[in-house]
Structure formats: structure tokens, C-alpha cells
Image (cartoon, rainbow, N blue to C red; front, side, top):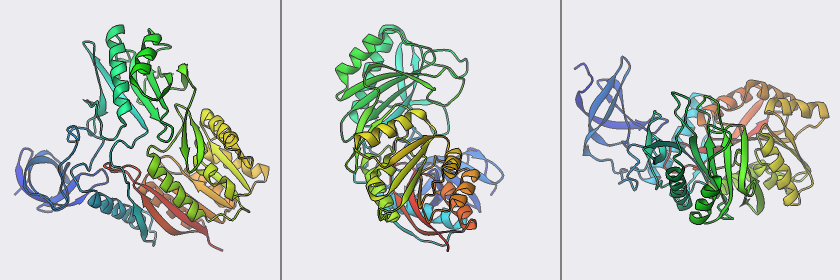
Length: 452
């Protein structure tokens, strides 16, 4: 039978996509159904049909998978954030480990087994950062997250991934919006003031930063906003305004003004204290980050005689947690404020064998070559898109004995490990760390050796 839109079919879910949607087959055709679990038997209502695949939604669960569980979040079916709130955590970890293994084999052609996946102790309220898109209608603020594959906001003031202080912060913003008749930015017209509401929290210190991202140079009645935030948000130490007047979907603009309190918040990782500015990179899950960095340190197996190069170093977190175990640490980062934070972090922790260079990773590596600095070990922690080919070329020229590659994307990790293999490097070990429970993302760390 030829499948058509609006058909209802019985389907058994066999697998999951990289975004967490279930996949079943109907007469050989792949059918994708969000919110399903392998071994679910369902009636699927087809909402899209193309030549090579179809998309359905759950009409009825005929026989639930033994790994299906009741979601603890009323927003999860609509919101595009959590893909696995309806699945046991054991099944989620099993899927994430197998997805990483599949990427290594299929994309990277890397013959190494994923040793383990390190699960999280806390599955709720673990994120230390959130950026809420905002829509204001008739004076009412709707802040939340985008629906799956859309820019339609699903209002959510009690997200299971965010700490409760962020919810209190939203209430403060809501009162300020009503009082000052604030408008929200419209992507289509380029008009309106408030684009996003942004919070960061240091989990070890309790310090919180609140930030309004605006399409203007300043905000009306900033004193009222500060007063409301101070009244409602325990641990608040900083209120910032980020200016983004570009017609773009990039969240943060280039300029941030502190309108009250500190320029940064502090947090602690593995006994070190770190300053975090509004736009600097910092892992979103404190407890899992400590597990990840411990594992990266174990894989690096430093003896105290090495020159360690930390590429994409952010505020210096990974490198500074290893600084006591090396002769010299060099960090490279493109965001100027993050580099300043990294320098302050080294000073604050009494670390004197570190230097930090403000440049993109390929250019920074070239600067090292000109300075005659030859790293023994390189820490790579690139953005989701992975490493530029020019950087991997430069790494080959730097010729480190060992690379510890930290990645938040299995596919780009596998691709880059394959390129490094062509350049004479062999992947010895890969470990997954579940940095993002209940979402489809997973962090991983690979140990790569130079072949002699």
C-alpha cells in the first residue's frame, strides 16, 4: 500500500535518530516519529510524506516499550529541548554510547570501541546557563524555548533543566516589562527592544548573573529591573545588558554593559576558582564537567615536564585544572573577554606557568610556531562544528606526542579523528560523558597518539 499524508499506520519503532526521534519502517520506507522509544508499537498519523521517508506523530501507543516512562515535564512534548523525558535513563545512556560508536565507525572509520559512558547523578535543574527567547503580547511576557524545528516559542517558566532561581528571574523581568511597556524584538520586521533573557549561575558559589539582550543602546528604567531582580533572585551578583542590533539569529551582540554589580560571576571546578563573563564559553553542567575534566586529565597522563597547549581554551578551565602537572601551559581563545578572564583565573589561582593568546585557533597555533613553542600535548575543545582543516594542518606541523580531543558532537569528532589519522595520529581511547541528560547531545573525550 502506497503511504500518503493523513494515513494512520501501525508501526514498530526500531531505532533513534541523532535528534532523538524514533524510526520505524513501513513497507521498507523510513517513518520518523518524535516522542517514541525503541520497541514502542504505535499507531502513527502521517503528517509528511516524501519519496524517501515519512514523518508521523503518535496517534495511539498500542504496546509501550519496556524502556518507556512517563515524562515529568508538561512542556516536553512541544518543546524542542528534551528528547528523552519519556525514556528510562539507562536506555538514553545506551543510545548515546551506541551513537558515538556508530559515528566513529561509519564517519571516521576509526577502529576503537567506546570504553564507557559516564552518566549523570542529577537529571534535573543541572544547567548553569539559559538563553530564553522572548515574545511580548499585550504586555504579557512569553519566555521559553523554541518548538522542535521552529522559531515558535513554547512558554516555559518551570524548565526541568534550569535551576529555580532562573524562574524567579523571569518573574522579575515580567514585572519590569509590564511596568515599562517593553516590546519584544520581531525577527521579521527588525523592530522591538527585548530579544532574549539570559542567566548564568556558578553552581559551586551560588553566584548568578542576569542579562537582557536588546535591540537598542540601553533599556528604560534599569533601576527598576535591577531592584526587581535583587528582590527575587537569591545569589544575584550581576545584572548586564547585551546590545545586539544586528539582523541575525545569533543571540549575543559584541557589546555588554554591566548595569549593576560584578562584571563576572565566579565558580569552582576541581579546586580552582574561575571568573565567567557573559559571553565566555563555560560547560553548562558543573558536576559532569568535573567528571569530564578529571577523565581528560587521566588520559593526558601528564608528568610535569610537558608543554601543554589548550586550544579553544575559553576562560582557561581545562588547561588551568592541569597546570600544576605541566612545565608550561599555553591557552588560545578568540573571545577577548574570555582571554582576560583566563589571565585573571590563572592569577587568582596562583598559577604562574600559564600564558594566554587572543586569536582564533589556527592563527594562535601559527603564533606559537613563530615563538618556537613546541607543545608535547594538545587539548582540543572546539565548537560543535569541529576543527578547521587549516588547524589540523597546523597541529601536524606542531607535531605533539599526544592530543586529548574534547567534543560535543560525535559526527565532527569522528571526521576530525579520521583526518588526524591521515596525518599520522592514532585514536587509542574514546569515552562518553553525559553532559546533557534528557537531551540528544553527548560530550566525549578521545585520546590520540602520534605514530612513531
